[in-house]
Image 1 (cartoon, one colour):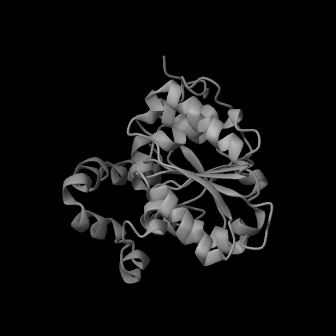
Image 2 (tube, rainbow, N blue to C red):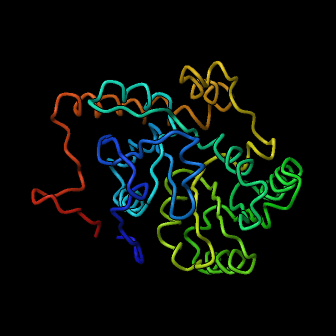
Length: 273
C-alpha cells in the first residue's frame, strides 16, 4: 500500500464522469478543463494505463487519489461512444501542456516546474517553453536519475528542489505508472504546489527531443503505430503484447460482466500487502 496516499471522491471537483473499467474519467472538454483546472492532481489514462490499472494496486490507489482523470487516448474516446454516456473528446497529455501554458501566459501566479526526461532535456524544454510564452513561466527543471523513485534520498532532494523553486504547478514526465505513484506518495510534501500533472513524454516533445506523430495519425487514433515504428524495440511489448488485452476488458464492461480486481465483495477497495 502506498504510504501517505490520500483518496478523494472529488474527481474533477464535481464535474460529470464516465465509468471506464475501474476508474471514473472526467467528462470535460479541453476548453472547460483549462478554465477550471486550478488545483489537485491530474492523470491522463490511455490504453496502457487501463491495462496496468487491472494489475497494479499501487497504481490503482494513485488513480483513486487524483482529482482529475482526463482521457488521453483517442482509442478510448472512440470506444466510449459505445457506452451509455460517452466522453466529449480526448485531451492528449502530450499536447495539453502547450494549451495550458498558452492559457496562463499572462498569469503571474502560474509558475511551472518540469520534472523528468533524460539529463538536460527538462532544462531544454524549459527554455523552449519560456521563449514561446515570452516570460519565465517555467521557473525550474530537473531530470532525475533512472530509478529515482526507489531512492528515498534522491526523492527527498527532488522535493527540496521543487519547494525551493516557488513553483505552483509541477509537471512530471517520468514514465507512466511510476510518475503517478510518485505524485500520490509525495505530493503532500510540496505544499506550495497547487497543481500536479502527470504528462508522460510531454517534456521530451516540448524540448524537441522526440517528434510527435503527424496530425492525421493522431486524429484517427493511430499515434501508437507511429511510436511503434519510431521505437520498435522499446514499444513493441507495450503495444503488441501487453495492451491488446484492454479490448477484452472493455468487451466485458459492455456485456456487464467486468469486475474491478481491487474491490472485495463488500465493495471496499482492496489494498496491497
